[in-house]
Image 1 (tube, rainbow, N blue to C red):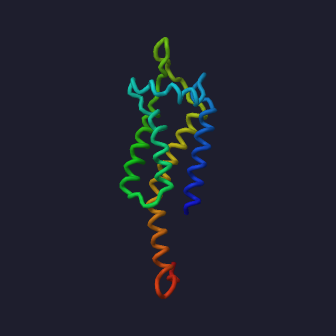
Image 2 (tube, rainbow, N blue to C red; image 1 turned 180 degrees about the horizontal axis):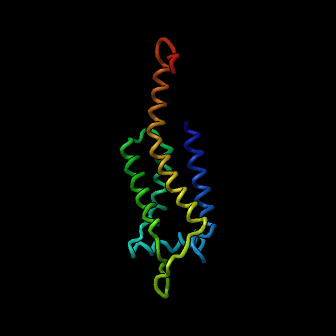
Image 3 (tube, rainbow, N blue to C red; image 1 turned 90 degrees about the vertical axis):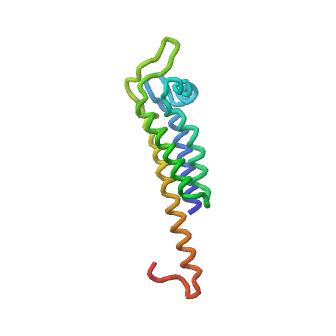
Length: 148
């Protein structure tokens, strides 16, 4: 199970890095949006902050022993910040806000990584419970339960 968790985190990291190289909106690649995205906070566009919660989501996905409510809260915050990126309509610039006309593949890949990582974090408590139940079954004095 641990290998699955680490593998998922590595895949998110690689896909997140790929999203930085792809166009997000016309004229901007993901890396540029990441560098300048924090300016959007001043116009109450909070989607950029999901990049800051991604390391916490990744760490909690790998660690065992973290309570399920803590994972749910972090995942919920992460999803809310990611969903706020769906309402991204302008880019701050020197000449004033530029309207976003369309989104590129980097935007959709970024959204997939963010929502997929949150979904995986929500599933990890179930993986932990299944692992604990398996260990209980395997350590019974009569051997593993044949029904499972």
